[in-house]
Amino acid sequence: MSEKNKISRYVLDSYALLAYLQDEPGAARVKAVLEQAEKEQAEVFLAIINFGEVVYIIEREKGLTIAQTTIATLDLLPLVVIEADRLLTFEAAHIKAKHSLSYADAFAVALAKLKQATILTGDREFATVEKETSIEWLPAK
Picture 1 (tube, rainbow, N blue to C red):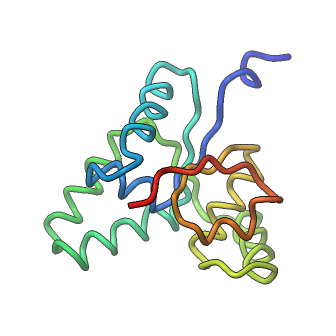
Picture 2: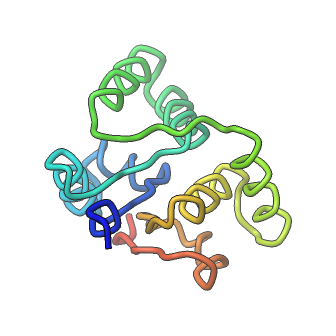
């Protein structure tokens, strides 16, 4: 088994990132995973669609200036941001067609499947895909 296969892989959704940014329940677990990534003991992925989801939520709730600060904060984290190419987009579309969850959440699921990663979330919408992908449940807000 190669060294790359030994490290943990995670996908963060907007729920996990917002919990981290706003120090909500689950923030400590997200922080621990990010610290593992900083030490190269884990890989943490974020679909650009989910990044955008966090930005619009922050802007809607707290304004543009805070949203821009949030972008700068997220850019400093040990996250691998994955663009929405054809493969990821069509996988997300397939997941959305089969399951009752948001399109943005379908991108997190698609990314987790493609990267063989565990989704960190507390969003109960993901329960519909629990048989298809690994999910680590964060505490409810």
